[in-house]
Length: 128
Image (tube, one colour):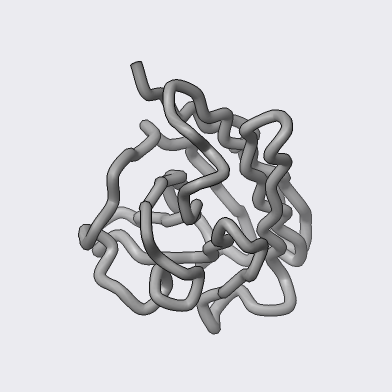
């Protein structure tokens, strides 16, 4: 049974940091492009960052220089280090797995395109 389980969300003040984790199981983790998405209330889900099986990364312009995506293939775990958080980063954050995509392709594609597995999300709330 495939599972993606996010953790690490919470409430912090603007300027603070959070580290999200996504524990994957039930499939060959290293064969997939992994990504973080977010969805704010009333808005469409959007890609935040992606990392592919070669370790290449891609970021949305809104988070470049503040967020870092990484993964530990030995632990089948994806991470998102979020620094200098802003109120506009408030959203539910989801991890997802896509096969046969590069990180750049994953960030450029619609959020619903080609996703094989989704997690259930972890809530991030940033106060001003």
